[in-house]
Length: 236
Image 1 (cartoon, rainbow, N blue to C red):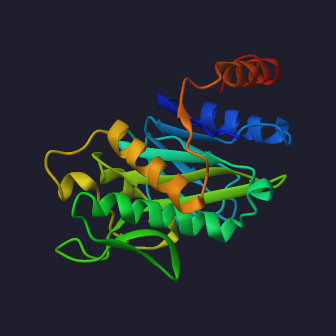
Image 2: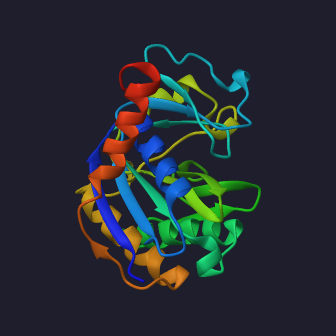
């Protein structure tokens, strides 16, 4: 079965979260796997086990409590967020395997731009291996598996404002410094290019059938919008 690969552009975090949750809850054994590549307006997201002590000064940036693993992180323009909506049972994959694949795909893409990076055994994500930014985190991971399928995913810092990360303890680590591709390579590749390179690597590592890039099924977002209107009177 082909995997649907979708560029969503810049979209509200909550709407995308609700949409991928809706897809996960309504899919069946015949539903296609999908990989969504998206960029979000500024938002902090706090995982299920998130602790208030890691929120230092969120200011005017909204905070969303979500159902993924991990602590608090920041999403904003210039950051590539990839959501693998995969039937892990069908693919015979475990959650740890998916995390490792997301990390490995990131490392492989960064290597194409001569950026040395690696995962850490004690903390999910990808960290720079050398140079003045060595040890800084360039990609963050937070997943959820429900009904045997994955959602949420990975955020790769490409060319963004890193200042909001100073308002939190990123991923629950006080003093953790963040990095981005724009500090390490010029010209900076577009999010679109990084997305396509990343998805190619992810499919290779997971042994997925090469997917087809196409428009996302907007009916998923329409259904979520309608549900929110019925519940709250307007989309949140």
